[in-house]
Length: 198
View 1: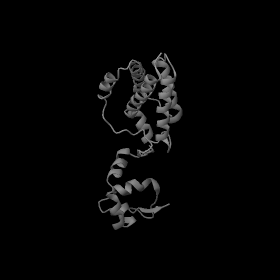
View 2: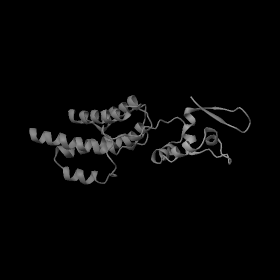
View 3: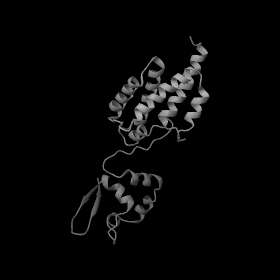
């Protein structure tokens, strides 16, 4: 029977292991960024991570298949997402393997393996802001570019709506492209496009 100190040490370290693995799970992050879990997707992802941790710690002799069912059901219920890239089985296998290693106190070996994971920024924390970009037919790469460089905003001040809609070369500017979803288009004459905000 493990002592209370060992049990506390195990829980603390296993929690960190779960966080490292979930923070590196790209499908979960994509589900949050694409709004699959709604506006509170990041909080939902943290809850899934917490539940998975509690399930692993609170149950002995879990098989990878059982844990996989739990995580797949959570992803389906909360994000309406099915991961067909085999990431869930791999995550479940690793979590249970690291749990056994942690129980045996093999933390240096676990640390060596976890250090091989990409060193991304931890995002499953309430103080980290995740950009919410729902999928609705727009190209997400355009939106990401606009998030990083707000150069289009200055142009908006200098040009009228008509100029923004159609330039002499027929080119539509990036900031106009971004506003198309929120604007209403009316064509009074051939060749001209008037933009009216709702």
